[in-house]
Structures are given as structure tokens and as C-alpha cells.
Image 1 (cartoon, rainbow, N blue to C red):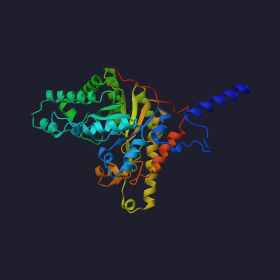
Image 2: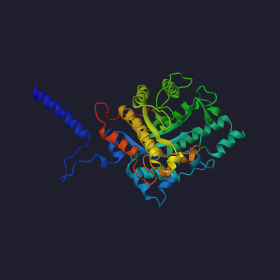
Image 3: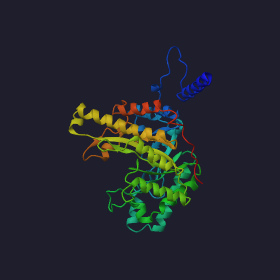
Amino acid sequence: MKLRRWTAVAAVAVATAAMLNTVPATAGRPYDPTAQSLGTLGQRHGLHIGTAVDMDALADPADPRYRELAASEFSSVTAENVMKWESLEPTRGSYDWAPADAFIDFARRNDQRVRGHVLVWHNQLPGWLTSGVADGSISREELRELLRKHITTVVSRYRGRIWQWDVVNEAVSDPWDTPSTLHYKGFWAQHLGPGYIADAFRWARAADPKALLFYNDYNIEAFGSGDPANDKTQFVYDMAKRLLAEGVPIDGVGSQGHLGTQYGNFDTFQVAAALKRFSALGLATAFTEVDVRSRLTEGVLAGDSEEINPRLQASASNFSVLLKACLADRHCLSYTVWGFSDRHSWVPDWFDDPPEGLATLYDEQYRPKRAYQEVKADLIFAGPPYVLPRATHRPRR
């Protein structure tokens, strides 16, 4: 009995050591997981830790640290802007592939998986498209054909090189919109009706049978009241369930994870419960655009530590909540931050009244913040039986 008990304990120890990638001490130096990158630590769980990449920053010769961290710290990358329609086809019928190709080549050189972002969104559309619809020179039938052609052209060009595509982005309204009852919003719903969503997934699948196809949205980290009239997560869940029932090849749902320290947000159990409900449908999940912004009060701008420190701690907590929930669900395949340094964050430009910032894992001098350390700690200390290797998801036919 004692032998069997010892054997069982030893087996657990061996399995745990293997998962931690422990190695014998070399020349008196013990293994130090804190010296590894986030991407490497994520691979212990089969989880890809990624970042959005700003191609202007990447190409800036005066900013080598950005390139170094983008290449070494993460195991997957997302193009922040260069794969959006206005960037790819600024003039009708004339594609500018150079920036997107450079991004794909960067990922290839650094052995990083790619999240393609984004095929269908109501923002950052080329002016020729929106103006043509507005003045009537582009009919509904032609618009649908233009959308089909765009999806087919872009997905076909990068066929076999994209792991996950954000096929449709932000198609659902918010409770504060008009009308307040949740509905399909934006340019595409207005001009083509909600059927464009199923069409987009089918066209993307035809162009690349091997990419995982995602619906992507914000404010869907957890379920709320359960009332479809104001619970956006429930609306997206019902939409995904309906698409699956109709045979639409949707493979996953991405939760953006744009949070703010001034809000209540959710705890780990609430977020994990939402992920598990989506995965129970047979879907993969991912956090796709994580950042945690804070109000830049006069005290923060003046360097008052009594105002700065609580925000940095709250930011770290929110980054950690999303990551721990992702780790807890084997079907959560990737955790992507939307930029990694405050030097190149989109937040101050977008949220300026009142001003907000401090949203990323590194400060403007590329020093890792408390949030970075908490994310790293979560990846190091997580393990079985509650954190298991990622499940395998294959594209739907």
C-alpha cells in the first residue's frame, strides 16, 4: 500500500515537472521560468499569448525595442490595421498588399501564428465603398458581390498562413444604443441585412478550408441578466447557436477584452462560466484585443503615486482575470493583448474626453508593469487538474 501510494505521488511529481519544463540544474543554476517569454510560458498549456502589431512602429528604425519585444515575447500576432479593408484596397480594384505581406513575413520569420483581422467590419472601410453606397452608385446586389469578392480575395491570398480569422467584427449593438433593444448594427446590417454574417463565414470557408473562423466582439466577457434585450453576451451566444444549427462554418467566438479600471468588470468565475458556455456549443474561444485603460486624472498626470498605484494594481487584476478564465477552459486557444506598450497604445487617441491611458503590459519606456508580472505568474503557476492543455479545434466544413 505504501509503495503504491509513493508510486502515485511520484507519477504526479514527474507529470508536473514535465509540464513545468523543469530541467536539471546546470552549473549550479536552477531553472528559472521567470526568465522565459510570455509566449514560451503559454506553450506549456498549448495557449498562444499574442499581441497586435503596429507596422509603423515595427518599421521605425529609431525604435528597435518595439521590434525586439514583438518578435520575442509573443507566440502569435495580429495586424492592428494593415489587414483592414481601407488599408488593403484604398482604390477600387487596386490592392496594396505590401504592409500586410510584410506583417505575414514578420510572423513567419519569428515562428508566430497569425490571427487575421478583420474581414467584415463597419469601420475602416474604403471611402469609395461607403460613398458609392451613399450616392446610390453601388446597389445592394453589387455591394453583396463586392463583399464576397473582398473576403475571397484576401482569404485566398493568405490561405494556409492564417490560424484564426476574425471574419465578422462587432455586428451587435450595445444597450446604450438606439434603439436600446439589442440588434444587428452598422453599415453591413443596414444595407444587406443580418444574413451577411452567415454569407461571410461561408465565403471565408470556401477560400480557406483550414483556417479557424471567428466572430469577434467587445463587452461579451461574461453573461449579465439573461434578458436578451440588454445582455449582449446572451445575444451573441444565441446568434452563434443559431448559425451552428444552420450549418454555418463558424469555429469560434472572440471576446475582445477592452476593459477599464473605472468599471466593476467581472471576476474570474463569471468569465470562465461564459467561456464554458460557448465551448459547450463546440466552439473555440479566444481573448483577442485585451487592454485595461485608466483615467488620466490630474493626479496621475502629475505623478501622484497614490493615484497611479491603485490603477496599476486594478489593471493587473483585470489582465489576470481574463487570462485565468482562459486557462481554465481548454477551448480558449489564444490570449492576445491589443498592443503591449503605452508608447504605441490606441487608447489615448481614442479616449480623450476625459483622457485615458496606462492600458498595456509595458510602460512608454518598455518597462514591464505589474500587469505583465501577474500575467507571467499566472502562466507559471497554473497547472493540472484545473488547467489542462488546449483542446484541438478543426475548421468546420
